[in-house]
Image (cartoon, rainbow, N blue to C red):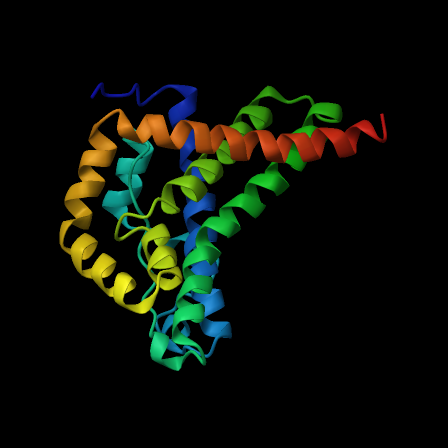
Length: 213
């Protein structure tokens, strides 16, 4: 793994982009769990958009340097949900969905910046923020524990199959995740998903913009 140039403009732009993407992602988990009746996120100070409440220093540095890392997980108590399974799915999906929505908003800001400010610094910052939100969305939907996708899949599977999946992959989750990250498998799976999501967002944005120009 090559070590990145810490003084490159891309490395500088990654810092605010990562803080935004991680904060939005973890806040979304906390907010949805809170709305479903769980007092845990509020009790632990996670109902805030302050990045300091949501970042894990080591995970942030790993994301900054190598684009693979993590935020500070939001602790939840599904026993407070009216429907435990449905609630867990909603809370788990909230993080990736928030990054998709953020990427969609950023795409509109990119269009606005292009037609008004024409500032290369701002354009590159927005492009970096867009890509990190796309990446966090698709990466967290991979069904390998402890990623959000594993909790979503566990909630969708029938009871016995869900239990077997959680027991089996719960034991090997971190190992499988490391293999996934360290091998070309991550690029083979993530890049097409990221490109598809990015293309869908830009298809919507450009077609709407085309109605007015």
